[in-house]
Length: 114
Image 1 (cartoon, helix red, strand yellow):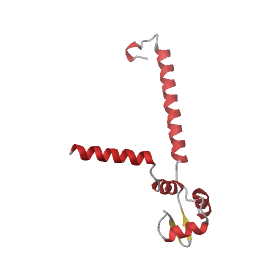
Image 2 (cartoon, helix red, strand yellow):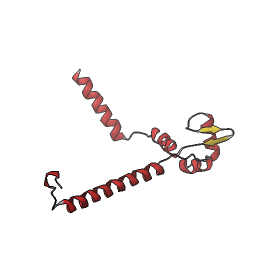
Image 3 (tube, rainbow, N blue to C red):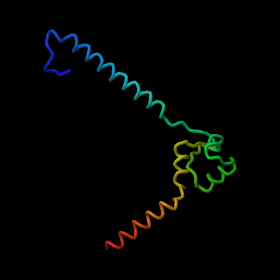
């Protein structure tokens, strides 16, 4: 609805339009609040970390001892965050042959341009 069109006769339509807009904004804000609450990080224990990584608990302890895996320690208890464990897994990605070939071709092309 255009602001220039509002007159005494179109006032009910304008108010109805504004009420729909406010309801849409309210709905979006509620969704954003729900999303913010659901994305809070909660620490997990060694059992859950073991399930996520598909490794035995002893292997997890070994990785912690070698400081190869992201973890937190409070007293004698270890804590992990799922997103950090998944990022740790992603950091160990091996490149495919296609990715290696593309990098090599890019490197060769740059060398030729020099």
